[in-house]
Structure formats: structure tokens, C-alpha cells
Figure 1 (spheres, rainbow, N blue to C red):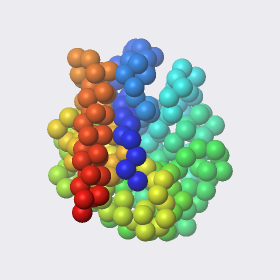
Figure 2 (figure 1 turned 135 degrees about the horizontal axis):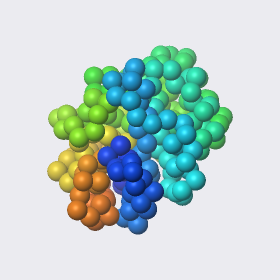
Figure 3 (figure 1 turned 90 degrees about the vertical axis):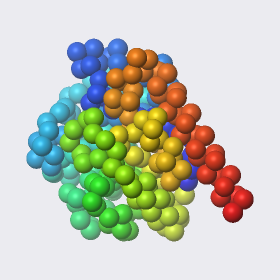
Length: 236
């Protein structure tokens, strides 16, 4: 736990008419991932991009594609996104229960990708209890999924801390914790103190005058907060 912070800019906030240039900008800025929001108009009310876009993205960047599936039928579509080149695939716990969640994780791993499960703000962390030992990452939503530009939901850091404790108890010390929603210079420190490793940023990066500088600033703030937390833990 408490690994160096990586920024995953969400291309949902990018200029889709100049998407390759937008990818190059975050590459130069030191982004750790490209966060790709896939919405089906059913699980969430918005409709975005799909398999062909992921396939094209995989051809133009060496950054890992962090593909967040906000879709109602992930088991059916997982093979499509694996074949398209997704490196990390996130399914929502709300769409899969019990053995079906475990089945999704197995399908992702069998396809050679990393597996992540996302939790909406009102979904308790304990739904991960049977799967967390096998996950590569957990995504804690700090807004309701479906639209960019929302404000951070206060108290989301408590769920991040709970997931970190669950992973520790399950012996999954390599688990990454990602947080998505309203994260920028004003909120990154609190989520990193709680245990977040991967920070999804939309407008905080793409609406900035200098997206590369924004990536570096948010990352630096997150890492400084993490070091402070580690020091306090060591003293305690």
C-alpha cells in the first residue's frame, strides 16, 4: 500500500476533435495512465465511447489504458475490450454480485489485463470481500458516475481508508486504490493520505492552462501528503 501517486487523466474532459494531441500532452506531462470512460446510456444516463475508440487509443500511446466500464452487461463485453487493447479493466460492483463478480475478475485476468472493481458513492466497501484478494485495483467513486465536472463528495476518503484496510487484511499488499471524481489540487491530499494511489483527473488537467504542469502539481501534492502520512504512522 502507499505506492507513488500516479495521475490518470480522463479523456472524457479532452478535446475529442484533437484527441491524439491531447494524449501527447499528458504523455509529456508525466501521466501514469489514460483513463477511458465507457458509458452505455443504461447503467449511467450518459453515452460516450466504445470498443473502436479503445482500439485506436491502444495504437497511439504506450501509456496503460485504464478503461472504466460504466455498462450494464460487463460479462458480455469484457472480451471485446480486452481484444481492443485495454490494460486495466474496471467493472462496477453494482452490476455483478457474488460469483459473477469473481467470474469477471477471472475473465479479465485470463485475457491478460489487470482487474479493477468500482464502487459508487453509496455502495459499501464490504461488497468486495470475496474478490479483493484477487484484484489489481479498486476504484472508489467520489462522485456519482456518468458526467464529468462534478464536485467531490465529502467523506469519500473514509471509504478509501476502509478499502486499504480490507486489502491489508486479505494479504493483497500490491492493491492499487484509484479515486475518481472532483479531484484536483484542493482535494488530492486528503485522498492520498487515506491510501489512494491512482488519481483520475478530468477538468483539473484538461481545463488547466498548462495540463502538463497541472499533472505534476497534483502528483507532487499527493506524494507529499503520502510521505507525511507515512511519517506520522511511523512515529505512531
